[in-house]
Length: 177
Ligand SMILES: CC(C)(COP(=O)(O)OP(=O)(O)OC[C@H]1O[C@@H](n2cnc3c(N)ncnc32)[C@H](O)[C@@H]1OP(=O)(O)O)[C@@H](O)C(=O)NCCC(=O)NCCS
Image 1 (cartoon, rainbow, N blue to C red):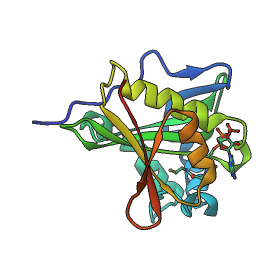
Image 2: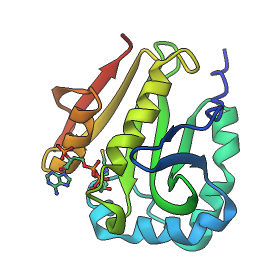
Image 3: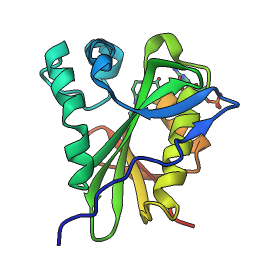
Image 4: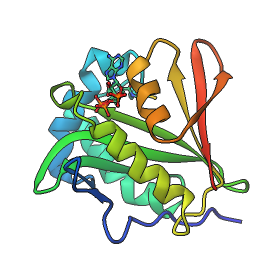
């Protein structure tokens, strides 16, 4: 049975207090995305594509609707309430369509870190994923064990630390209520 398509959040997910709005990626974001992928602080801890030129970013963005339609993944830009600038990214990859388990990924561009954007974005997406619109049973993240900032984000969003995954990563998970 094919996995159900992943819809875009409607209405869009917003956190006015934190100044966060999650929006779909658009073609014009390719340069910002390639810049983020090339940042060593991101590549050190996150799954960044090996090919990360602006053309690669354009191709990845162009593939987003097909990934959603196939129920594989959804990726959203962390933008400002009234400003489309790419401040970060938050996404879900469906790892088990039967049990409805999704893996969460997120990053915030260095210039925007430390102001609560990741906590707001991860809170919005995990509430949405575990709520009635998407109905996931579990959302989890694999975090490098030295990544205190990511652990802070996940703890603040109600995830619990489940222990060692492969290599130097730790799994954090949140389940439906
Ligand atoms: C992890 C990351 C997304 C955090 O983004 P952010 O917008 O700065 O996070 P927030 O401002 O919401 O802060 C989250 C918490 O982490 C804490 N924190 C931030 N940077 C920290 C650091 N270097 N060391 C320890 N704690 C840190 C904050 O104080 C905050 O905790 P608090 O709410 O108790 O004060 C960002 O550092 C990043 O993109 N890192 C590289 C990619 C990455 O690690 N992604 C996660 C992969 S699983």
